[in-house]
Image (tube, rainbow, N blue to C red; front, side, top):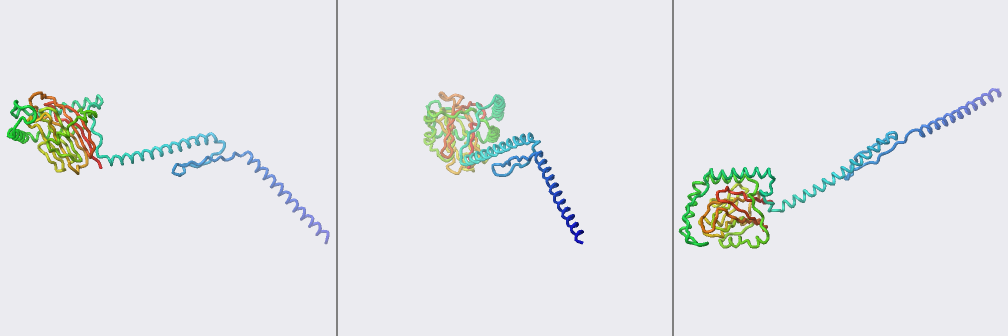
Length: 348
């Protein structure tokens, strides 16, 4: 009885020992195999994560060792993309800041740059301007707006005070009669001129010329006003030039429409008769000038054949807006169309 039990116990113990040994051998083989696989298996490589300047992730991925060259190229491209986006965002931020500053400056300005002048044009632009200018000259002739000798010239006087009150009243009546007959054609011609965006060739005056410019003295001499917006025209002979101002409202201020609904007024109008060789005209808004674009026109209404007065008249123009002044000079010939001299814009 005892012998079989001992044998059974020995067999069981042997089987257990065999199982343990076999298990350990198998585990050892598995560990060796795993070690071999790990030894010969490529390691995973991680590409650094990229972020925008705002902190948002651009991309994150893994590439195995056999594709290392692809990973490197993608890493370079990723870096270039990152730098490109960084530069773009930086540029956009800079442009946005400049745009904001530009808008802020734009809103604070009340006197913008004047219109371009003909000497600033390219050859092609100048050819087109000359064609339009010829059309304007033909238009004023076709509309029969060239004023003949309406007035009897007094050759006995010299300079200011050469005519008496009766003669002055008579000359005003004659011009009123003329405008009653020609108001519609003159309005048509003015509308044609208003379409032009290029100035007729005036130039900004030099500092020394401005210092000797007596426009304000002439305005004060004639009892003219000053205001937050003021456009003045002066010339040095007995000709009759007329100042025309195209307002943002669509109105035109000139000798036959001296006060506009938008608050402007032509308060000085000279040389209907040849009364002065130091002539001036003045349009003014004492306050509350409307915002928008203004265009300044000059019309050579009448050539007075008196003393050294010729058919070519040199003029000076002064534009004053909210304390800022610009002085210009130019010339116009009798028979020439009304000239769009310059423009300016009032903003908030």
